[in-house]
Image (cartoon, rainbow, N blue to C red; front, side):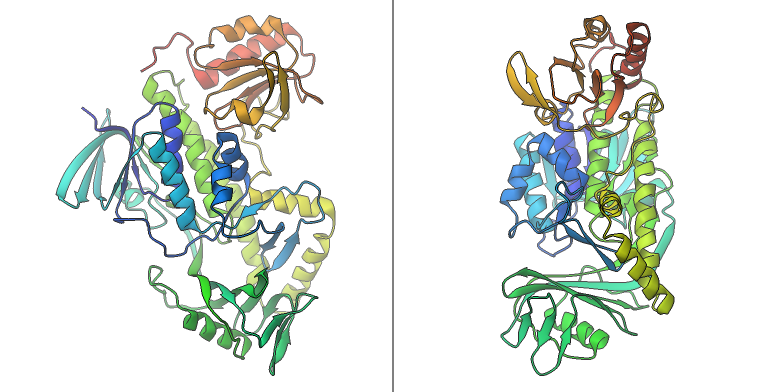
Length: 513
């Protein structure tokens, strides 16, 4: 007897996203969170990258936009101590929402609860054990210890993940000595942001826009709204600060004084956060019936990528867990979660570690490297490519058949579609988190093949301008599992489609659990 199909440990963005995705498939998740209530301690200050498109496909993005704390910022992003300015591009590959993590978690929790998720706060997992049929978690709740049983358990419990440690999964990597401090503050009249972007401190000095490097560290700032700025410092400190201890405005002021050698008058703070960079990746994201996602699986030494990666882990995993639980998963499907998301994590780790190399060295050669890199970013192809790296959209999963069509493994574009029932889009088709076979040419020769999977895969015939292929087989996580080249003959397309359907969506006569 199980208490839940999937036990999710951790009610951060990754765990809540996973819970909502599982409920869309009909799976019963149980979320266990050790904190008794949502905390307002600032962590991430925004959400950006590829996951924004996925959230739009699920119909959740509008709720997040409504919860933002200000106007959408222009697409300018830091990358290893230089600035990536995407404002010149008509279709920037990277966007961000100014959304404090506490607000993000509230929206995701409301969504998860609305679709029927059970969330238990104040329930700490102390032990896990697994057998052939499921996982047992030892829990300490407000009323004392108890055990809960699930068929799978997913650790979404952060970089110090007890689940990862209890499962014995190594987490190799590096912790850098940098301590980074962020603050969103108002400015008194004695401090002005000038028209050229510089910061003028009356009676002291003028600080150039961008990154200011000194022997003690790095200082940066950026305007948020009239009269307020984001202030950032980084210093090497070889004693570990207490991450859970709230940061104060005085701590930020002292850090600015150490780095710049001057006092920066600041008013009220609306956000204060502190963190240390790590570059780590779990050796495996799955150990039997125990899986990892989000910060429990990876840590990246750059801002703006961790939430994106973790929530995409959740979307990739949810439909595969549902397939295993419902009895139709083909052999090896659940293992592709590790293969694909470990691949994606390694890619993110690569470019974030490259940022470490760009930003950490303080000598003339490093200054020259950053200057050359910044100059290259003035070229549109370079800016577009780096922007896509930050967004996590610059790669394809290495799926079977990826050598046959360039779209295989890529995120499905949101095509505007015209059907017999009227207009729709790829985003609308994927709102229910079901796989879709999108026929863009009326290939009747392939409909018979797909008909065997009709109870599991939605078959949609539509027209679109500038169609990228004849057919697209789109997984619930919005990645393309198979595509037919334009005008591909039936004698090759039909067996290839049957193979792809079986590879990703199993035996068409398998019983639904």
